[in-house]
Length: 367
Image (cartoon, rainbow, N blue to C red):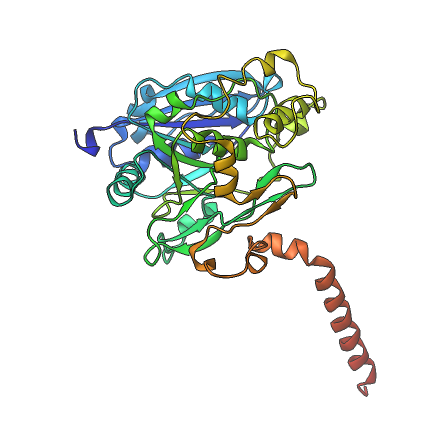
């Protein structure tokens, strides 16, 4: 069977998102073979929210390819739970792609996704492959001079103030120079694999309200199940990162609390001992089914990822241009916004000094 005959399932969890409709239309408009693109859509909307559907008459024929679960927004239990619901709509599609509901696509994205997995399998020792990263910014897709081979890669991670591992902002890697970049990081906004991966590593429905901790847990579960994780060989999707004007589940639900799921993640990853935190039995009882894989150990994952649990430190960077450099030179490489945030006080002081100098110059100038 050629790739053109193979199917791809696209998981889209949407929470009161006005961009969802645009995502659907960009998905089908830019697919090489839209008839073989199946969408699993979980819509969590209020009654007066704009729906998520195809309105472009040219794309109406693909409406039957969209399988939908609709939930009242006040029944939502966070993004991890919604992503689980999306996977329940999957049948036996050949490939799986998970995105957020505010995503735009490159032309022929579907065949490019399939080709990436097959090329990596042909040219590396990896037999089971996952492709993931933080996609470039939403509006970059409209730039005619965009370089699709300059691919954002999650170089490293860090322990946040809650003792959970989070991923640092992406750093560009030239895929014309560095071809197959392996990492331990799966990002929720672009996660690509063969369909069998979802059966072998099923999503956990018992992680209510989990957001922080979702990605490191998924990375560990997939990696210990024998899958190697790679950065995409080229950019295929673009993500809208700033949606300050849009509602979020943790804002709408004043009782939003992730502590049970958060502690469950810590237990699975051995960040805490089982008796150090309490979680409800119905969450704990499913750890075996929705826990780590059996092909590699947790310790192997932690060593591969450079995660020092005891000292709460990260010791590795996975961007190839950092190879050979001391980790202290690379561990804080993130996106520009993070860099500015970390140095904001210094910038304010510099600006004040410059303004004082300018003001003094003006006062000394004769009228």
